[in-house]
Image 1 (cartoon, rainbow, N blue to C red):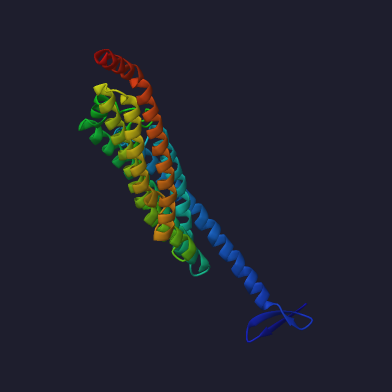
Image 2: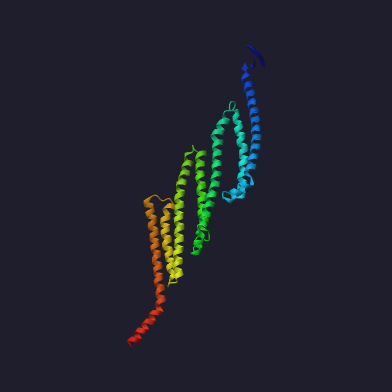
Amino acid sequence: MEVIKVNGTTLFTLEGVDLSFLMQSVSEFVVTALILVLLFIAGYVLGYFVSRVLRRILLIERIQVTLVKSGATTTSMWKSIVEFSTQYTTWLLVFFVLTLAEEKVPITVTFFNEFIVPLTVFIALVIIGLLIGGFLGKLTKDTLVTIGLEEGLTKYKIADTLGGVPISSILSTIVKWYVFLLFVSQAVEKLLSETAILTETMRSLMSYVPNAILGLLVLLVSLVIAEFAANRIRVRKVSFGEVFAIAIEIVIVFFGVILALPRLFNIDDPEVFQTSLGVMTQSFQILIVGVALGLAIAIGLGLKDSIVKVGGKLKEGTG
């Protein structure tokens, strides 16, 4: 190795190779690494203290009790959200402080802006959607109970239509998760705005969900109406009332399924719908014929004794 001074600059050479650039690169790397380490430590310390403060605020008893009573969340879920949020806040501030090394490491700013920020928005929207969905679901259930929906269904003996599950609970659950999906779809678009396939999938999903909910509501209403109509027939205690009640239930539910089918399965093609409708109609006709035959046989058997008595009286009168 030779040491050569040129215009006051010391150059290290090895068999004619200039080593000054290598030494300069190594020194810059060491300085950059030291800066990043110091910024990492500073960011972690800052994040730790900020997350502790945030944790204390979020775990204030009044806040927690209010959220639980409003139905936005449960106690265990809120604690999980707080724990995750505080941990994420710590690392968010670490990455934010690292962006101060932009002059030395420009990629830190790019990474923060293009990944960390969209990820933060995604997480925030998911949490907000979960809380708002829970709140609106609870509000829906309380409203339905207040207006006496469950009492009315119990009064007319149709509360057990859906296997004992309260209709108010079903509707509130639908509201809760639909609102949550709305926020999730927006979050996915923010995080994966450049991924066309995923964003298009979420848009298709969100366009399908309202139709599916409408179809489900139509089906629920048809079940309730069918049960109500059947119970009205049973209460009157007419002849063959049970047979008529079952027939009425089948007819109403069938038409409910016909109306709900295109919504539930997103059938937009008229030909596909007509084919499906034709198959269901034929099946329904066969079912009706079977019920009619059964009803005719039942009526015949039920009236057999009466016909014999009437025939006997006519015979006596003739004689």
